[in-house]
Image 1 (cartoon, rainbow, N blue to C red):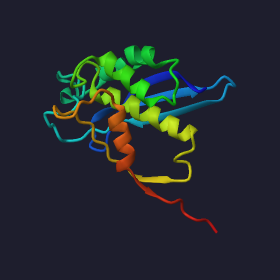
Image 2: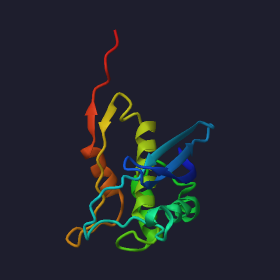
Image 3: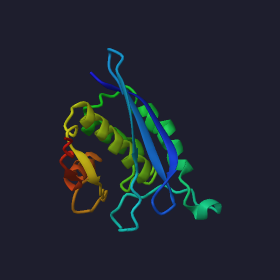
Length: 175
């Protein structure tokens, strides 16, 4: 079984020059094989009432957009919760993240921190299962919303729908 060995967060810059959260997840098996992957929380411009809230620092630095608190959540509580979990059980990982946050809008730990970690654990799992190995991504669009009409008990509904929104292209042929 392949388990999560470590989870690290860091601040990176998105395409608009704003800080966002990158999650790095290291997984390993009993035989010592290791894999490290990274995913960045997409930072959309929409602010719908049903969306998970990004955790921003506020204040004067970076016009209040810094994500140091969200990064600290990844490196602290989120890491402690996920280390040792089976990487192939996305539902359990997402349930642990949702339970850890404890809010309906993901505001305590930040939707940006939770989505980056969830997306990377999903990416690790699929890479290990070689589901996506023969494909290359041409674009990724992710939407993480919660609505009162749909009970969202875990992030796996979001990450599963992310796979459905990815545009794939077959690998280029070499001659």
